[in-house]
Image (cartoon, rainbow, N blue to C red; front, side):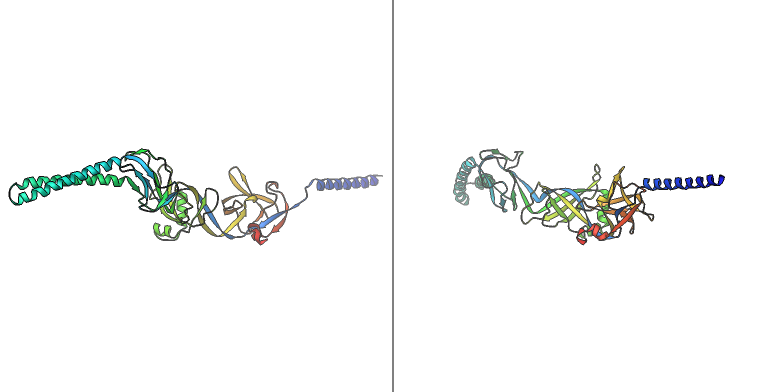
Length: 369
């Protein structure tokens, strides 16, 4: 009887263990396959972007040197003009009358000099009278020349080749050398300068990546830069960085930089804006998709798979690659690490997965798929 009870107890225990095992297996989640990539190294170009303001080689305010009413305007806003081309003409009626009067005085003074010369030669009068007459002649000539200069100044010409700016004043407006607003501005935009600022760290990064011994050598050897226009399109001509300011701005800690862009088409205009892109070529770096990372508490996180195929979160430092799709990894990941690129944000740390390894180059360059 006892033997029968013992056998029954053993069978019951085996049955309970079997049920517990089945329940445990039923509760455990299945190991799911997720795509991972085994990291390698590649090359890329980073483009640092800086907002810039555009100015021509020269931007010259055109002002009146004499007083007068605007009688004629020979140009239009945006017109291209040559050096010496007439832009404005001021009214000169009063000055012309003064010139005629001054010329008459010159004639009279010259007659007086001519009358006195023979008298002095014959010692009829002293030469003091003649010298006085000559001085009077010189004075009226000087007055006449001053009036003629005023008349000439009333015809206002362009001092340079360039583009006419706005024309705030109209026909009949009274202007003088003291008028606050210029008649217009002529901009020489055969070359356009893009002015922008970089902070101290960026300035050091730029110069340390440039070839050359001296600071000027480094500037001369810097790569060509791009200009993105305000409408988002890329300007067709490459530019060249020409200068860095000698010292940082004490208030902002930034350096002023000037890049020049050829502007034969006259597409760029003074007063415009854009974005300067400075390229940096990187060799043998790890590139990862931005979509394969998470941002947690101001940190960028990537998920890698360990030797037991369990997911592990690691903090990484990255730099964005232009285009908004990829990062360059500065720290946190190594070649041959297996990084999760599917299910990011869904798969929890510590989860065991079945890695589905995909090609690294195809991940960072879809054309190679």
